[in-house]
Image 1 (tube, chains in turn orange, green):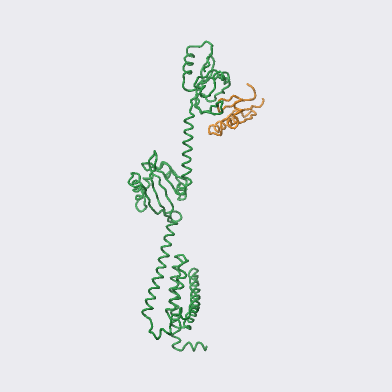
Image 2: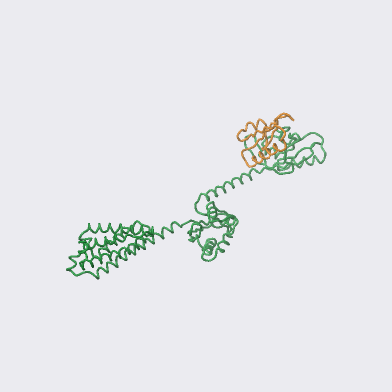
Length: 69
Length: 394
């Protein structure tokens, strides 16, 4: 099974973003415990171009980059 | 722009499309892959993008169905809006899909953030003040306190800080404090400020604490603004009170020294010798200032020794005092010279000592002076009886 690569887009270190991050970490630890996971957090305030390239419309948004569907 | 699919639709779906199209909230329909299938004009405005541009684009897969969540909506200019998101499972164009409604709450959230910031600013100001501050509403309920107030509570052993914090009834606590505590008097003053009868109210009250009795000054002023009430500040004035008390005690002791001086001068005036004798017995200070200073120095040293003995509970050396008495006799000193030496020694010490120490000097000095007088008298008595010459030849 190939590695699961996840990208979480957030807008600043808000309580909402913190909640999304903790929920996601819990999901990775519990639901995806048997898989190799790599999580990258992208703050769209710090890197707006990346959000535009990925056509991110809302945050928090989680993108599964790999494996393909 | 509204994206409308040209596929044939059922009546129910037409009805849903009509409702969603005219919804004032933004509505986005995404299929199971998260791709946008439809969005209404409110959603276009919220996203600040055209519908055609977004059609088929991945919006994302909503993880919360049926629940409410808040998301940031990103706009092309880099700005973002805050939206309350709700997701419903629907059937769209014959397939399972999600209806995502987005209610723009940007204004509300920014207003809340501004309010929180303003409140945090007010709290920061309150917390930066050293005075213990309590803000009360019109009924005397606490609506805000500062950190100094809570710290005071902790230092005084209050474990249930809720009883002195927001929501607690300050007026009831004042009334319950009972007579003699200052509570009822403070309550009366606070109510007078609240009713507008007084512009402000200040009150000093004692407060027993772990380090003994402390004094506080309470100052209450009306709370001006939309919410009416009172701002009550408490300041610890124990040090000022203590300093004032010490100054008063010191002044009292100095006055005692002056009084004693006046009395002795009167006694001296009454027992003044006649003209002939006076010429022979002018005051020591006048006829021999050096001897007076030397006597004062020796008397001062004995006074210090007496004080040391008093503090350390050791016996005072009375032999030295007898020797000093005899020395005064040998230079023809009179009792009033001893009184002058004593008063000068007291005067020298009255300026730079604590009231407690001054009181000790005062008490020890009196005993010393009496004993010294006794030695002087016995010296003269011995001399008169011829014993001294006998002792000298010994």
